[in-house]
Length: 303
Image (tube, rainbow, N blue to C red; front, top):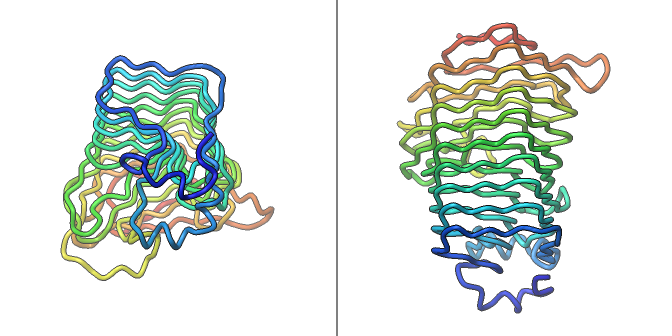
């Protein structure tokens, strides 16, 4: 159980309660619970933002190769529940992560600068991304994850403050989203550079999801009034296939790409998304995206 007040976190290395660094072959397993007691932080969300404490985590692994996490429950982290950074060969399975829907920035699992990561057969419900895949990550496989509440399974955000970012070879399959803000999402900031490519969201089940499919190259900390920039992270080879379920909002598919660096080779195929609000209709928005849109409901048309 983590400290129940902010003062108890004052000497935590790397803004993390439980921190493992450079431990290869580490296994953590069992049916116990890691309780971050985060409510004292959520009430002071503005304090956290103003003091740049976005990396506060309950449990973080840095440069831990061949890592195994199995069976534990993680609840109510101050910020991110589990952080994976600069690791190679990670398997996370049969875990439960839970925090209230209105708890700020309580991502389930954050991945950065890591390769060969597998997350499977787990339940994640938080106030932010169930899984966030950040720059330097490749060969990420997420299978059989039940997400909700939360902001979905996201690639990004990438390219913040003009930075260079790269993510590739991400496969999300056999997952479900229930009552989430987003489903499958790729988000990049204007003015960044690099790429997000070879990303697959396949065999997905939706239940009352506000924004099921979204690519947003106009993301600036959740806002959409970003200043125009002459470059963007290149988004390409993104596939959404075999999706079924309901959308809580009318905008079921949004492809919002940059005029300076349009999205390339986007495929939406065998997708059937209907409204969860009875007779309401759903629609798609497509801007500066090129690819193939086949057997999609709602239909996708890009000029």
